[in-house]
Length: 442
Image 1: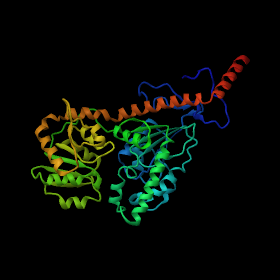
Image 2: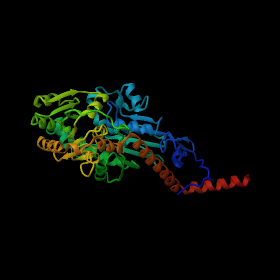
Image 3: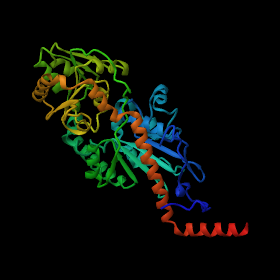
Image 4: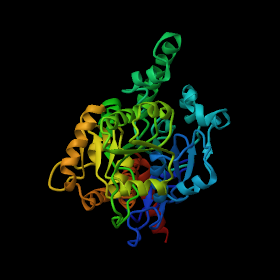
């Protein structure tokens, strides 16, 4: 359905500008992005709010936020709390954010998860009534913002709250809340969070998942379909040229669910091989206590050093079940094959079959399974060429995300405009009569 170009938008007191959303003709030099002419309504430029859960470190979700803001420069950013330094905000693409009452809570950097009971209330307090388009970037509660019937809400879901759903029992064990009165209170809280999470899924007009794995979880938990747009990954157009070293690499935050322990235990049985572990976290001391002399812990490394390590590693080892796994795609973009746990988003990144493989999988996050995978890798190492790895990673490049996300939002904005017009036939009829009278008067 197309609106009649001769029909002017109705003048209705109090009507939301989003009743008739229009897209400016795109500038072909930068196709399908918000920079390419702007997103507008009859009342002016489309008013866009971007909602992110919270901002305290730069991770994969923040790279997606950066991509969304590339598509919608100037959008207002809202989050529960924001304790990033100004340089990190500028890297993402904004100068300041609008925060909730949680911004004043003490100990946010280390203990923000203790405020989980307050998060649904806090996210619902944002007044977004002035915006035409609301985009939530959600892995916890961001999708729970309240929007009206004449506002379009698109939610990019990094993951439903895994600690409230399929990872509940692991979360309770690792937090020490799996028994006693504290455990009972935690289970009651997570029960409430599941109810709230399911209910707020109905307030989203369009879900976007970061992987097919997350799309299946959205379908199972919310009963909703979701488009799949993989996160943006920093991949150079040209393959970096660098000699490979003789070491294997893993990089992650050192927490239990990343399964770095299994990797370290595997290399304890492979004394002839060398493993570098990049990252820090609460598991560091325990991992050092079980590691052999052939394992080197690097602690935190910056992006430039991590890129160099990825480029020169024989292979990158990844033992976590992640919703996507940006670091896996980054390693491939540096021309490095990946040995990964065959679950979650990694299965959508690594090519393990066919004429141009870029890595292989192991079935369980155990030392024995990883040792078997490394043995297979050594037998087939020549098959996993840097060129194939890099070519595969280009599927996830930032420019691809910008085009896909902008095109998706543009199509949904146009569809939403037509649906709102169809729901308001009286307004359309009134508008036609008004234009006819105006033409007769002239």
